[in-house]
Amino acid sequence: MAKCTIDPLTGQILTISGKVGNTLFKTYRNGQVRAYLTPQGGYKRSTPPSKTELLQRKIFSIVASEVARKIKAGDTRPRHIIWAEVKKEAERMRNLCNA
Image (cartoon, rainbow, N blue to C red; front, side):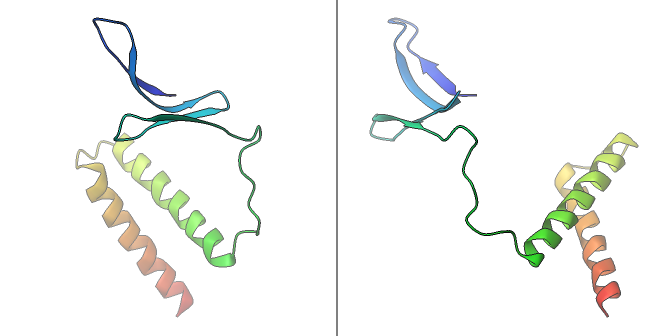
């Protein structure tokens, strides 16, 4: 979804940035706007993900699920505080398993 700033007097688009369909818009600081066409299926990786990358993805998904569960259960602390606590516990558990 692209973000757009419109001049209320003239109705002219002042800035646009983001993606609409297959077109990516970017407004630079100097006011220049560029549009880029992106591939239909997105960009493809040239190499498969490494074992480390797959492990980090797995840890991220576990931590994200646990943070969401805690918030749903009524934890009112800020999300970044809960995230840090859960991540620390996940890393501790991983180190115990590797030892």
